[in-house]
Image (cartoon, rainbow, N blue to C red):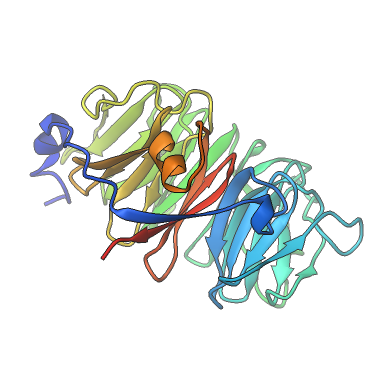
Length: 326
C-alpha cells in the first residue's frame, strides 16, 4: 500500500486546528548584536555546530555567542555580498551568491574557492542546493542541474542540465527528489523524470510521504498525490488551512523539521502543520516581534531547526531564536 493512501481523504477534509499558545521564549539578533545585515535570506548549520546566516550584505558565522562576518572580496572572499542559499555538509559549505552560480567554502574556516561559472552553468542565480545519491541537485534561474563532484575533483566538472526553466525549492525522500519551478513540480525516481503538477509556477516543495507532495506558490498551497494506478492529482489546500494570501510577494518556503512537522510562511506569520496536514499552531509576525520587544511588523524570509531542536526564523529585521518553553 502506498504511504498516505488510506489517510489521503482525511488529509483533504481535516479542518484547520486552533492555534496553540505561543510555546517559545524568543531571542532576537540584529545589527546591534553583530549581524552584518538584518535581511536573513538563508540559515544552515554545519558539521561542527556553527550556524551560518546569509544576508543581503555578507555571510555570518555564529558560535552561540558572537558573529564572524565574511563579505565580498574579489580574489579570496565572497563573490557577492547577497547570499541567497546555504548548503552545509560535514566538510564545508556551498553558497548561492546572487547571480554568481555556486561558491564553495572549504574546511569551515573561511577559505573561499572561486564561483563556478563555466561549461553551461553561467552567471545564474542559484535558489537551492541538495544532495541525492552522491550528486548535488541545484535549482536556479537557468534550469535544474545535476552536479557530480568528489573531494579530489572539487568543482572542476561541469554540471548536467536536467530540465530547462526557472526552478526554486528541492526536497528529497529516500531515492526520489522533487523540484518546484515555473514548469510545475518535477519528480525523479530511478532515473525517470516527469512533471506531476502543471498548474502554474510553484516555489517550494516538501514530501509528505513517498507519493505525496506539499507545495506552495505565491498564491496557493497544494497537495499533489499519486494514486495506486499511477496518476497524479492536485488539490488546493489554501482555504482548508485558512491561509489568506500565503506569502504576499515574498519567496515561499516549506521547512520539514525533525518532528516531521511542516512550517510555511504566510502574509501574516508562520503556520505549522503535522504529518496529516492539520494546523498545529500559528505564529504571527506581530507576536514574534512583540515577544522580542520589537514593535511593528515584518517579512518572514527563512527558517531552520538546529540539531538541538531550536528553531531559527529569518526576517527582514534580523534573526529570531525560538527556545521551547519547558
